[in-house]
Length: 435
Ligand code: AMP
Image: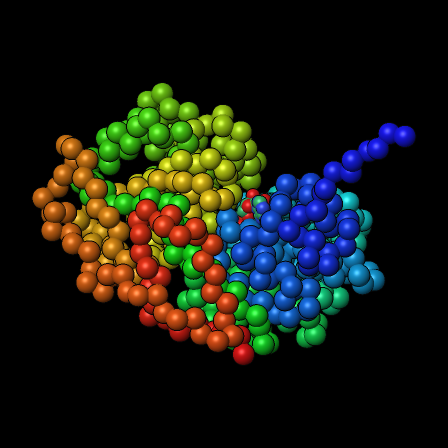
């Protein structure tokens, strides 16, 4: 008799009690062990608890909310309307979430639709007739369809708000509040945010009841990112950019500019200079944006010149450099932008060009992350002013606070991995905790 040795297909996800069809999806996605946020969020999510996840994209939070949500759908019975609603700030993030949910639910009959503006509403109305179980969408179009009575949300059992702080930045909170009023009161809420500005704390207070708080240390730059400030005069930014792009280790870069116009112009200039560069900004049509993202993902372009539209949620592996050609509008946006590199525990480099006009921003950002950011001088680009730009006193690292009871503080970094090292600082903000 021939004995067939059975391959062990167990993964670290088996312990959650997920349905076999979902475990197959997990294996198909190539996930072997749960990431820290998944280890903490999935059990709470499966118990039906509300969750407040303080984590940025890249930590594995999509599967952290998707798996409990899918399990719940598989365990219950479908009605006429969707049973889960996932709201995300940008079309790119909504698409990315849908793709991950599709991968994880591949072996289940769960139906999903993605809805966002900038594309035909009629196709989306048609797709809604097929009674999807999950709607993933951006608040504007979701509200539009709701008000046109093409979308009903009265059977939603799970609501996910992803990148809530970004939704606030984009002015979506009023739309979200209107959407919330169309949801049944009795439901599970999963809220994810990298930072907790007071508006989001207020939203969390209104929305969540006795939440499990899962806090990753990474509301700050990941330790895999070597990030530094590059003092430069405004008129020399192009030259400094060329200098950095020419470095041997620069395989693939996202360059951030302050305005759509600057992104478009810089992408054109780089292309003329012989780089494989493409722009990504809000004035482009959805088709153009998709082509740019696809081309960058497929490595047909080495450089993506973007406005903040691309700063959050976009998960492109292998981005070696993030270059902030202009500083972002807020200190919080810094973490999001530079988080486009150093993803999935790979190393990344983030360079931020700072001019004499940016000293206030530098201080506020260092205060937010609780640590000084290294200054780097590149020969030929020193400016006298910046030699005086010393780290803010209040930004000096402080000792890690002791964990408070009831809260889960997880730092996924291996010890000693940090390059721009900092002890976990107190951010001078209070955070909502699990009761
Ligand atoms: P997210 O934060 O959800 O955008 O996830 C970032 C990336 O990590 C995505 O490409 C995921 O597919 C991947 N990922 C999520 N969870 C795991 C896991 N447990 N093991 C390996 N990769 C994962």
